[in-house]
Image (cartoon, rainbow, N blue to C red):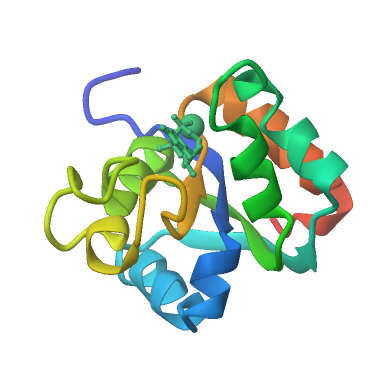
Length: 145
Ligand code: UDP
Ligand code: MG
């Protein structure tokens, strides 16, 4: 990238069932919008267990996989495509560390999460995973330019 050049990215954000249960849709959206991050697609629905397993397939061998996918299919979620400069890392910074006890003060997870599993939000961690995860939930037609 040229010095001072822009690095516009897209990333997938999910407000997990605990975030919906705690009434945090508006709070999470507000944090994105306040940072100048654009929401260019949004859907709300409940995942089946199979769909949650597909989404988290990379974690299939981890001990927490069964509990995580049960939790993720336990109630509705909100999925969003975010767009902005360096939005993958900026979203991860707003979210905070996976374990809320280790998350920086003022991050979504530090402020609201109950546990390492029930940690309110998901965010893609790299450009390739962002692309795969966006495609898991959205067609090109759902995304506004
Ligand atoms: N997770 C869990 N136990 C762990 C690690 C992760 O239940 O020890 C859950 C948690 O909900 C996390 C998700 O699995 O958000 C995916 O894990 P990852 O390591 O990718 O964390 P993230 O990218 O969400 O910070
Ligand atoms: Mg992850």
